[in-house]
Figure 1 (spheres, rainbow, N blue to C red):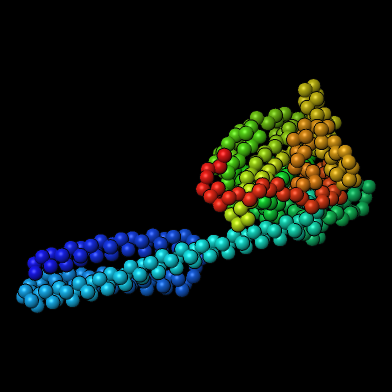
Figure 2 (cartoon, rainbow, N blue to C red; figure 1 turned 180 degrees about the horizontal axis):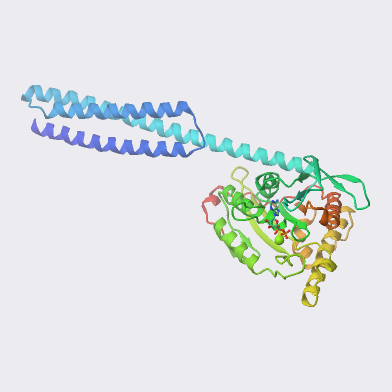
Length: 432
Ligand SMILES: Nc1ncnc2c1ncn2[C@@H]1O[C@H](COP(=O)(O)OP(=O)(O)O)[C@@H](O)[C@H]1O
Ligand SMILES: [Mg+2]
């Protein structure tokens, strides 16, 4: 009898351990479920019910144990013990099955939801890419900076139109893919740029550029101040957020980075090394182009295909004519080179627009570097930045007509760079 009682005690002890174990499992599964992208109330109800069942079972076990510990006469004791054992094992089975059900439900739902989410994200991307192919693969955005020093001479009758005074008198209306006025926020600007940026995850080469005279807001648009970030930091953040399976990001100097902060710091270093000559026009004038190139390797968990895309972010040097800056010596030579590269950029777009078999990519370092991001299989967003002030009208007109010319380019449907599907276990392997 006492032996049997001892056995029963051991079993209760075991049962208690199992119960603790089950509890932990439930906590884990609940946490997993909560981290999933869903808010299914029914499941949460089920989890609560199962959790309550578990508590109830635990209470019963405690209760039974108390009965067992109370003094018993030998035969009656044995009977009680047998009955208790039966009850305990049935309770134990119930607890196990309840926990198992919870685990199955949660992980299956989590799987379903993740799958659904991925499918929808893919569909959205595909629709966007189709839309963009229909509209051609070059977007030209005009952005007129805010300038509190004077009145704006430009008007914005719609989201895509800009009314500008003509040098010879009168006014003309120009159309862009978007025309951002002086009050457009960085968020608004990025909203329209983001889908283009993100298509590099799908394996497209993407180039975002800012063109305009010094002081027109190129750096503000691309980099932006710390407290009001522009396209670059936002793009980098989006990329890091989106690429849960990011393999590698290498930029210009083939520097490997693993966080957006590293990458931004690297841009900062690049910025400090930019030659900033004190030209007469603006002491902060950036007399060089700043290129940031990010290679993005994506892996589609549904189609199991690897994509190779590239994002190039370019803050071009000021487009103002050399004479205006009255540079001399080294500065003049530098200015001439800048003018040549910008002129050549225009020529490349013109050649693309006319469908010429020869595109003069190699005529300048800039277009050479951008070759695979400006051609037929790339997506381009060009910001033409201008001042709103009358005193800059002549440069503004030149900048706007540069933008209008680029708008005429039809790149044709962009091509993806996609690798062959990988075997299923490849996911677990570390990227090379
Ligand atoms: N959209 C804007 N809103 C407010 N300030 C702007 C805007 N664009 C440019 N600025 C300001 O104008 C100045 C010149 O802009 P910047 O981006 O440096 O020109 P760029 O790079 O073309 O030479 C900076 O002080 C910048 O903060
Ligand atoms: Mg600048």
